[in-house]
Image 1 (spheres, rainbow, N blue to C red):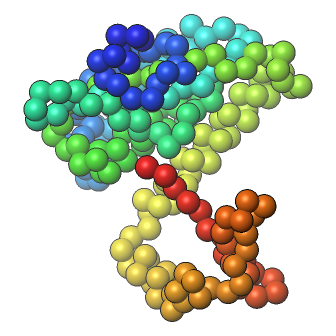
Image 2: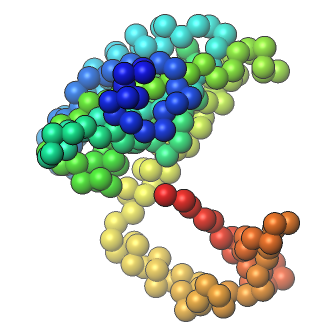
Amino acid sequence: MINFKKKYKGGYLGYQNIQSFGDVSHLNMAGSDSDGSREIYQYSIILKDKIKNYLNDIPENISYSILPVIRTLLENGEYKTITISNKSIKITKNTSTNLLASKLIDDILNAVFIYDLKGADMVLYILDRPWLSDKDFNKNMSKVTEVFDNQIEKELYSWAKRADLNTSDKVNRLKNYKYKNNFMNDYGDPVYDHNNNLIGYKLNEFEYASVETYYN
């Protein structure tokens, strides 16, 4: 892990272990046609088998925080690592291999689109660290696993809903957007938190619009 951090850089200091899941370059050309779908399906079988072996090494009473990343080779010959999940994923020994494989594949395909990695060399790694033991929970680990699996399932569902939204749907939603003619500073009465940061606007007696700030 020390050598990985030294070579590929990145904010991975909290993660103690690393596991290579092999080359995933073939996924960067997988389209929405039948050949692309078949490629993804075939890889999902391979990935589920790798995940099964990976989960077998996790102790019974420990939950893990994992961070999937892909390493890609740049044109200048240097390597770059990209975090492909928008946040760490919580798992246990009994996490669903189907859900986790689907999540990882979705994250890889999304990263290919966002970072324009079509045709790039890519290797999938999982960084992990022990997160909480059963002593830290009021419920047994089977309940904990259920909660974690439900969270993965929700994220997969949200991605599927976005993917199913075609261009005409997006255009119609924008046309029908209730506040499309309002500038941000004209939404309504500003609402501030205790640190005097703007967190939203009061639109009327019953409606509020929240403001979310993202860094980097």
